[in-house]
Length: 237
Figure 1 (tube, helix red, strand yellow):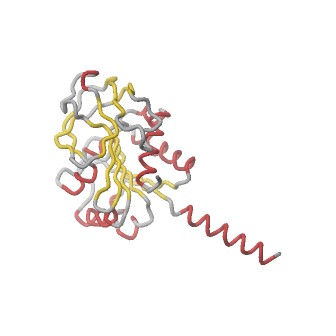
Figure 2 (cartoon, one colour):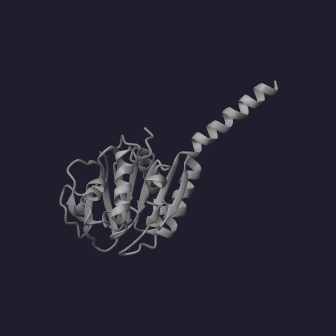
Figure 3 (tube, one colour):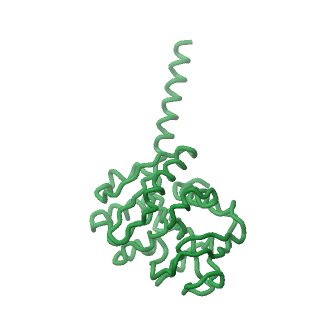
């Protein structure tokens, strides 16, 4: 009986260790505009992790981007990062992480980041150009079979800050487009994506433009959208 108890305890301990390995890193360094919503976004993602079986670390310290440190994370989330946030050595470590099968999630201003690093641009999928005033718009959910969009209505009206892009990748699986007729200031025409995913250089990448406002991180539809993107990035089908 004692042996059985010991075996059960060992199995239980092993399962806990396996569970603990599912961890994500939220990176929110800004070298340009700093979004106030980062302050509510980080605890919201931590809450998603606590409710859905993954651990969450957060940092603004680019020195965390080493091969040894990144290997513990199933995905790295760039939460409204802006500007030049990683040096050459840190960029190399992150590239190696993705090439080894790591996951990436870009949120909102992640496309306003690292303009001089073409590999990153291809990973995140687009580069920011401009935005009009914050306003309500209609989003067309063009793929409702994906883990981050299957809960959304076909037409999703919401208030946020809507980006125009100077460049958009051509290998993206687009999930959501914005209807430029539903608001003022759109500059990408009928093909104006707002969320997408793709396989890239050995890893998985998801991006959502949504999430400028503080209110986003208390919106159940948005939070489930973000959760689905994280789950895709960490390899959950």
